[in-house]
Amino acid sequence: MDSAHRSGCPINLTLEMLGDRWSLIVIRDIMFGNKRHFRELLTQSEEGIASNVLADRLKRLTENGLLSRRDDPSHKQKGIYSLTESSIQLVPLLAHMGAWGRKHTQPSQELSIRAELLEKGGPAMWDAFMEELRALHIGTPTPERSVLAELQAAYLAVVARNKGAVA
Image 1 (spheres, rainbow, N blue to C red):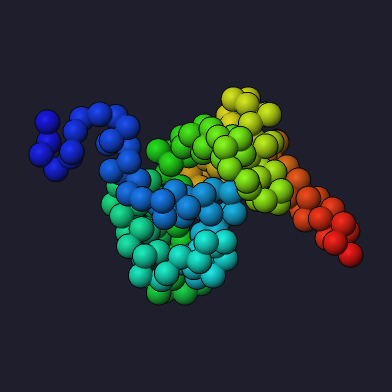
Image 2: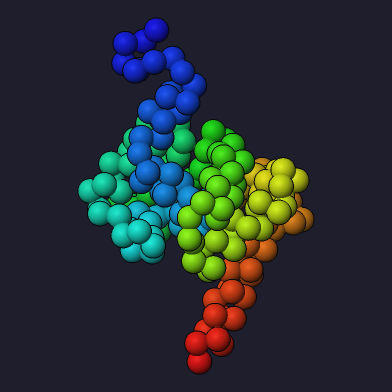
């Protein structure tokens, strides 16, 4: 057993690799929001992550092989973050977390619609989403189905419906 780890339990090792809640939030924002730059992740997160925390998590996630970073050709000091195969394979875990959160917490309609669709879509939808993420982040061929577009359309429909109910 490597003394750098608390135990060899796979759940413990997964939690040690992901770090803390911010790591999953960063992965979520890249995965579901297609936010790929530091500034987007900093300013467009619902939770309001601090810049030093974001910088640390991006570094840790990259070191742990969950993200890759390449220079942005439009600006030498900017980086573009991409999911790796390891983080793409977190889709089922995040889908289960979203389903659990819908059942055991009181999420907003707008922010839970994606979780609802992923829960109802099940493994077939998760697989299609992972194929699309591989195309976006790793460069595999683009699939016909865009789960991201489906999730975004559902989100926008709920936002519009809720605006109409308030007006």
